[in-house]
Image (cartoon, rainbow, N blue to C red; front, side, top):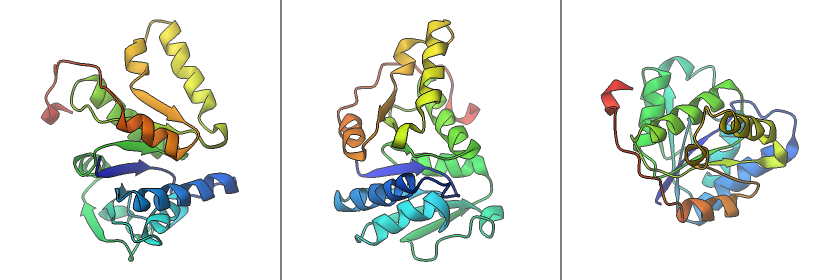
Length: 193
């Protein structure tokens, strides 16, 4: 892996441990010479992960839709800022630029980004490792719901297991490095997404 996309909130929320973990993740990516690809903002958890990487001389690529440049307040200090037309293009560009995906805590947008790329993997469009950094148990209920989907027969266990989970960035990155994707024949073309 040479680059990691990080999906996370444009707000910091109210858990200081989540805020510090976002910064530490960015710092760790820089120290491991992994390029950070993220949503391009200087605010919220996005800003924290970017600042963590930048403070330790990391390469940071931001991807932001034109209409969000003022709302999410784009980060002027990053290595490269790519401006796209819409949210779908943002996800596609972030995916193209990365070798793996990590979701930090966030809101609807973070979940939407994560589940779209997980769905792409399930459909055989990519085989990148995808992980959740489960800071302070933030994703516990979501993970329990995914297990319910499996128990009800609506999600195959092997597809559930595509989503790696750890409460530390070192553990998650180790899992991502050793990830062996399941073979899923492509039954849909990327242009059809």
